[in-house]
Image (cartoon, rainbow, N blue to C red):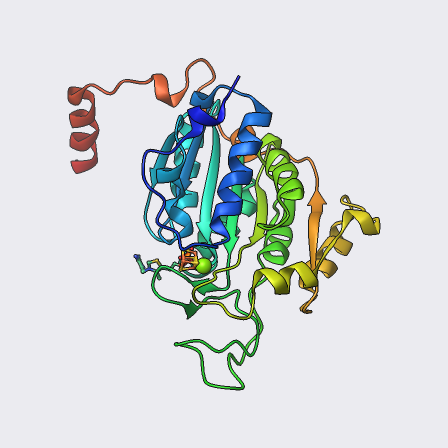
Length: 289
Ligand SMILES: Cc1ncc(C[n+]2csc(CCOP(=O)(O)OP(=O)(O)O)c2C)c(N)n1
Ligand code: SF4
Ligand SMILES: [Mg+2]
């Protein structure tokens, strides 16, 4: 049995008081406790940002705080080296939808067996509130134009994921713990590329997308009878650029994941290969020929 004590992180949390990241961390811990699988079978990767500090705040599992925009390629490597591991990716909207966007699209296209959690606060929180690709049209920040503000529509991670080929696409809200825990569990248990876009207030920089705003502007897809197997309808909903945000599962399907289509060693996993220094030298020598 996994206990909250086992998940206690090694470092003091430095997020601002009231930050939406707290709700995501709490939901993640609850999801892991409820899934109740050995912690050594899970690995967490993150990029760079306030949200990406999460590996320091959760204990008991292996994790990798990587480079800005790159947690998905790291996660893909970990997963393919040992497909027994379930790899969770925690990434910010800046991390995933700006520098990391190419990785996100191609991992979805390849249906890599990963659970990707986007901490979506509309800003680059760590670097002091510049508008991110998910900031709404008209958003004013220290890097977007003064009123009338950002002159373009936001990137929709749910729409991009559906179009690119992700097989589990959902949206959660940090303030709705019950639904978020359920979505995180489903994403982790899914075989294939799973994305949960998580609405996460940044109380320090984003004065538009606040707790109050999301409480008043979110509604449940499932309570409105959405068919999660209807990809076209899921895309229509994901592309709606309104100030009401559907929360829940947009799309869910079963397709072979990347590992199933690759010629991975059948009898031994990459993790079982030990490369002696002389073998590595031989590879280098061969390449030099
Ligand atoms: C390669 C690289 N590019 C840019 C940066 C600067 N940088 C650090 S965090 C960040 C944005 C973080 O925003 P987001 O991913 O949304 O995370 P948040 O802080 O909002 O949780 C940027 C641009 C960096 N550290 N490394
Ligand atoms: S700056 Fe924003 S995202 Fe970062 S810890 Fe503070 S409230 Fe959270
Ligand atoms: Mg952000």
